[in-house]
Length: 114
Image (cartoon, rainbow, N blue to C red; front, side, top):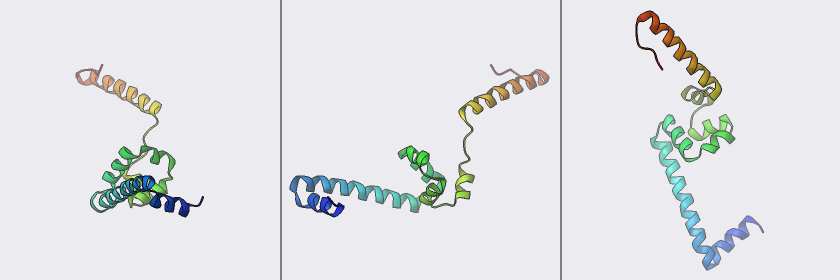
């Protein structure tokens, strides 16, 4: 069955027609929300909205596609949202920083971090 035949069936049959109209209205609402976001939000806000609504897109889409969707260049995207350190590296950096701060506090007479 072709796409055209499916759409025609959805429009012509009463039960399917209602479902078709509901799906069509949901799609239109998503398009309106996206247009509004593109016109009124800054890139960081559009990125946050995308991340909140569809985080899986950021895992699957190419960086170029995400930048294009947000209306920025790849360079701007990288500048706004630098890649996060891997979790194990973040933990290691945290341990290092706490031990470094504690070692410095011994010299300066300040409180140690637990």
